[in-house]
Image 1 (cartoon, rainbow, N blue to C red):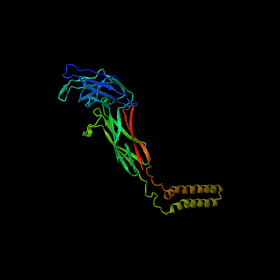
Image 2: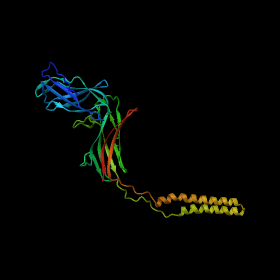
Image 3: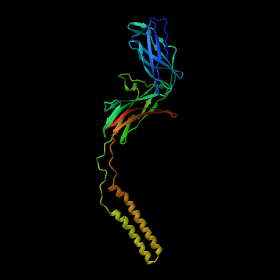
Image 4: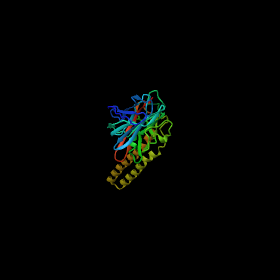
Amino acid sequence: MPALSVVAANAQAATATTLTAGTLPAGSCAQPLTIAVTSGGSPLTGGTVTINDVFKGNPVTVATVALSSSGAASPTVDLSAGSHSLTATFAAQTIGGKSYAASTSTPAVAVSIATECEFTVAVSNITPSSTTANTLTLTPGQSGTATITVTPSVEFTSTLTAPMYVTISCSGLPDETTCTPTPENLAISSTTPESCPSGSPASSCPPTSSLLIQTFAASTASSTPPHRRDSAPIAWAILLPGALCFGGLAFGARRRRWLSRLSLLALLGLVTVLGTTACNPQYAYKNHAPPNNPATSPGTYTVTVTAQANNGVTATTHSTSFALVVN
């Protein structure tokens, strides 16, 4: 992009501000910019510059950056999907005891963003810490924590008329592992900032969630219940139907009704089978109980943390990831 500049007139010390847009990384909404402020052809040795945007017809202040001693700054700003009109403004300031006039880059720099980046998701404060960046290392039965931060773009929050809730979830975990975000839902409002100044209270920072990753060791307790040597129910299940059926056979023999005797024999077989079948689950449970719970399988896993917002019509999802190593 060509450099754009304007010189302020009727000022004690005129200034010129230039704004250049760099190449946008593929699939990104983080637009790199370059700003320079000069006076009489010499760079200023300090001061601040405000980056402004006109997005969907609304003026929005995107960021305020400090100039280096060379009178330059190279910020990266998160922009929402769509067309943008960016300008950089150096407000009237006194630097080194000398007053400088305000100036604004002109014409505006046009930038088009294709990726939806209403908010970004980041993971930090991984505990226990690891020598490998962005990695949580645990042994089966151990737990770890991380901080998940959802940072909205200032352009996105400027369009909100009511709080929007973002739900945190995990995927990619090994079996026998749980992921619990607290809180699970984070609120973003029109006043939610996109940065957290050092020493600021949590209320003036982007919302965060504490993520708990819990692995499990193999169960050592026996899962076989106490064995009761009580055979009376099984005996009654077989003998009682048989006794009743033999009584019926005797009655049928007295009356010489062969059909009745055959029917009673069939009934005897059916009831006996049903009785023994009913005892099978109890026998299997007492003698073949479920196996002990296994431990979390060792390995290296990529855990994806997803933040999803839903306005009732469309769902917006952004994610980040970190490595989980189970030794």
